[in-house]
Image (cartoon, rainbow, N blue to C red; front, side, top):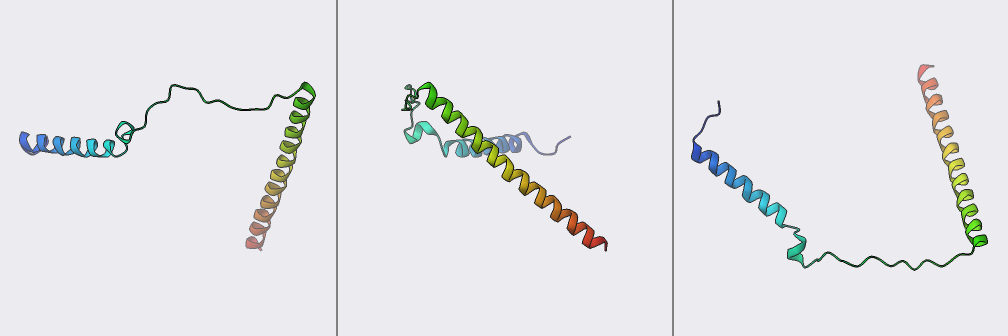
Length: 91
């Protein structure tokens, strides 16, 4: 069973509540003047024709493939260096 009086326990709870209120109030958005915006963001994307859209998709696919090749080469080189380091340590 916990030691201490009821007044000590209440004081502890009051200090804990005061710390919590202080920390939560640091960045209270209402106090800082921020209000939740009701309007939705408007994006100004250009309208693409079907041919331009297909070209755009193909360009994205090419970039993705080239990035995957670079990642694969990097992984193979790192794996090779790890194997080489282990082999040198054993010899």
